[in-house]
Structures are given as C-alpha cells and as structure tokens.
Image (cartoon, rainbow, N blue to C red; front, top):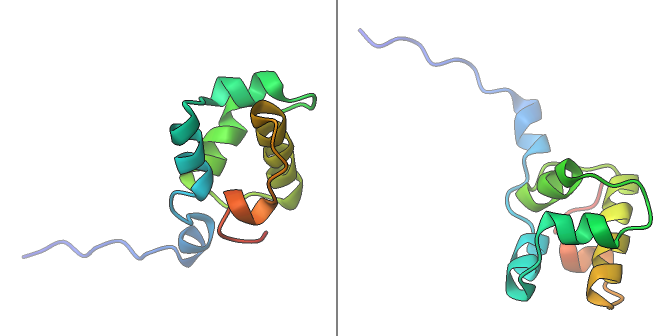
Length: 88
C-alpha cells in the first residue's frame, strides 16, 4: 500500500519561478554573486543574488538592488525585464 503524498503547497508554486535570465547573463560574462555584491553601493547580500538567480520571487526593492548591482558590475544599463521574467 502506497503512502499518501503530502499536499502541494500552492504558495510554493507562486514563489518558485525557475531559473531567471540573470543566471544565464552572469554565466555568459563569468560573473559570480560576489562580483555583484562587490559592485553594489547598497546593502546587498549573496543570498539576495542566489535567490534572484534561482527564481525565488523577490520584492520590487530587492529586484531593483540586484539590477543596479548588475548594471554597475557590467557597466550596462539593462532594464529589469532583461534580468527577470516576472514582475513583483
């Protein structure tokens, strides 16, 4: 007799959005989380970058911090839509 599977938490599907374009862009340029943290003038952590790359739903404020760190690290002026495939 099979054991019943635990119910799927619908909130988890809303929080986990899959790998984001940011991950691909970082890999293409050979950047790591530490590079974005070092480039940032704001308080930003490695955990924020890791969550952004994995596709964990972020607040607009965190997305903007990651975006500004990305733009400083790469000397670009990308928009939020180029790094993330969702809006907060």
